[in-house]
Length: 148
Image 1 (tube, one colour):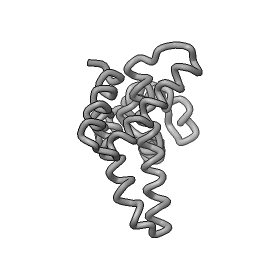
Image 2 (cartoon, helix red, strand yellow):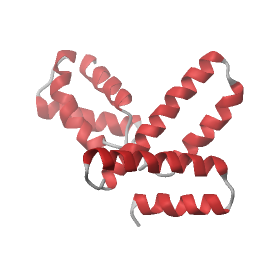
Image 3 (cartoon, rainbow, N blue to C red):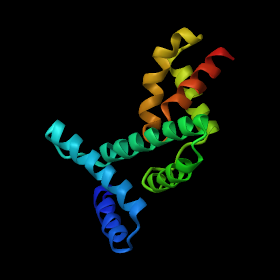
């Protein structure tokens, strides 16, 4: 079953179970997928659907940080629950150690020696970790490896 089909089936189940939080999150994701398909005039593949889910996950992670900083405890639990729903549709995330191994391989393959060579390393790393790691984390690991 593709991710789009799974999202639709889970949306139907959430509607039947009157699980409004899950229903709302799944509707937002499905609307995002449909919008991308409409804009690009083509059907999204599995990776494209994962990108949309990851984008929604990233938005909520940023919102979580903002709400923590502003002390909005009332909204924090809802955002955490939305993040949990979205994580069920994302591929397993790589650990920092796994990312570092991939980065070290890319550094040796590209011949990078300093932080100035990040432009050589990132194009080798990002396709391998797409959907499995946050770009900010990858960027931080690349900097750390190149500095050390």
